[in-house]
Image 1: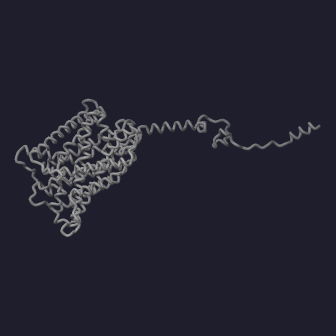
Image 2: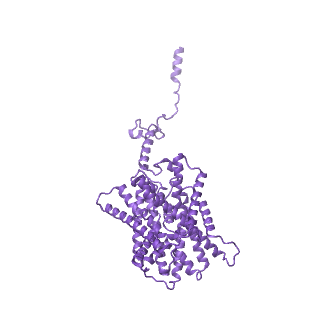
Image 3: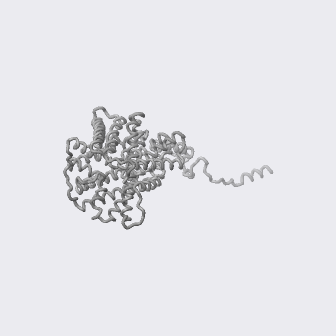
Amino acid sequence: MSKEVSTSEVCSAPPTPRQATPPVSAPPSQMHSPAPHRSPLRAMVTPLASPVRKAVASVKGYLEEVGHITTIHDPRDAWLPITASQSGNSYYAAFHSLSSGIGFQALVLPVAFASLGWTWAIVCLTVAFAWQLYTLRLLVNLHEPVAGGIRYSRYMHLATTVFGDKWGKILALVPTMYLSAGICTVLIIVGGSSMKILFSIACDPASCSARQLTTVEWYVVFMCVAVVLSQLPNLNSIAGVSLVAGTAAVGYCTMIWVVSVAKGRVAGASHDPVKPPSDVDRMLAVLNGLGIIAFAFRGHNLVLEIQGTMPSTLKHPSHVPMWKGVKFAYVVVALCLYPVAIGGFWAYGDLVPANGMLSALYKFHSEDVSPVVVGLATLLVIINCLTTFQIYAMPVFDHMEAGYVHRKNRPCPWWMRVAFRASFGGINLLIAVALPFLSELAGLTGAISLPVTLAYPCFMWLAIMKPRRGSKMWCLNWALGCLGIVLSLALTVGNLWGLVNTGLHVKFFKTE
C-alpha cells in the first residue's frame, strides 16, 4: 500500500522545469536556432575556430605588410638620427627636398651667365636641371629596389653595396662628407656675414653707440644658434625647420630678383659673354660657369636619407609619397632658379660680383632701396642659413653617432650627442675663420661634387637593376654616368687651373 502511494506520488508530481540555457559550445547566434544540425560553414564561426581565423588574419596581414620599412637591415639603425623615426610623409619629403635643393647657391647663377652668355647659359641650366631630376628619380627608386628587401637609407650604404667597401668609401665618402661639411662651413660664412650687415643696417655705426662685433664674432654667434637648433634628435623632427628654410629661401630669392629687375639695368652693364684675352682664359671661364651651374643643384646626397624616414609596405611603397614631395619641391626650385638667373643677369650683366646677387644688391642698390627691404632680405638669408645647416649636418651627425653605436652596441647618450654636434660646429667654425674665401669657390665645389649628383646614381642603377645589355636604359645610364665623370674631371682641373692663373685672394684667418 505504501509502495503504491509512493509510486502514485512520484507519477503525479509535475516535471521539474529546466532552465533554457544554451550549450556552452553554441555561439549566441544559435541559441534559438530551429535546426538541430549545423553546416560546416556555420561551424567556422564558433569559438573553437577563432584561433584559425586569427592565424588567417595574421598571415594576410603579414602578406600585406611584408617589406615594411620599420624592419631595418641593422636593428641598431633605430638608434641613429636618420632612421630613428619612420613616420614621414610626402609633406615632409617636400619640406626636406626644398630645403636641401635651393639656397644661397642660386644667387651665384648670374655669374655663370656672364661667362656663358644668354643662349648657352639657359641651355646648360635646362640640361643640368633635367639631368639631375632624372638621377633624383633613379635614387628614389633605388632606395628599396626589391619590395620587401633591403632599404638603402644612406647614400654611403648604397655606394658601398655597388662599388664595394673600399671603393665606395673612396668614391662617395669624400664627396658626400665634403658636401655636408663644406656647405655647413659656407653657411657659417654667409650667415655670419649677413648678421653683421643686418646689424649695421639696424644700428648705423655713425649714430649708434653699440659696439660693432667683428666678422669672427658674428661667426661665433651664428654657430652658437645653429648648434642649439641641431639638438633636435632626428631627421623627422626637423621637418618644420626644413619648411622654414625652404620658405625663407623662396622669399629672399624672389625679393632680390624682383627688386633688381624693378630698379632696371645697371649703367655700364654688358650682356655679352666675358671675353678674356686668350683662348685658354676663355675656356677656363666657361668651365667655371659650368661648375657654378652644377653647384646650383645639390641635395642628392640627402635623398635616400629623407626617404628612409618614411614607412613602406607592398601596398604603399615609400617611393610614391617621396616622388610626390620631390616633384612639388623641384617645381618650386625651378620657379626660383630661372628668375634669379635670368633676372639677375639682365639687371647686372657682367658687373655681377663673384659672390652673387646678394652682394650686387648691397653694392648697387644700398642707397636707392629702402633699408627695410634690404634688411628683410638679409634676415631671410640668415634664417635660411641657420635652418639649412640642420639638414646638411644630419648625415655627419648620423655618421658620428654610428661609430659610437656600432662600437658600444647601445644608443648614444644625450650628453654624447650634444658633444658630437657641438664639436662638429666648432670644427666648421674653425674652417670658416681659417678659410673665409671658401664661398668664392662655387665652381670648384660644384665640380668636385658633380659625380654624386649626375654620375654615381646612373652606375648604381645599372649595378642594382641589371638591365639587359644594349637596351635603351643600359645605354642611357652608361652614357650619362661616363659623361658625368668626364665633366667632373674637366671642371675640377679647369677650375684649379683658373685659380692658379688668375689668382685667388687667399687670406688665411683674415676675415673682412
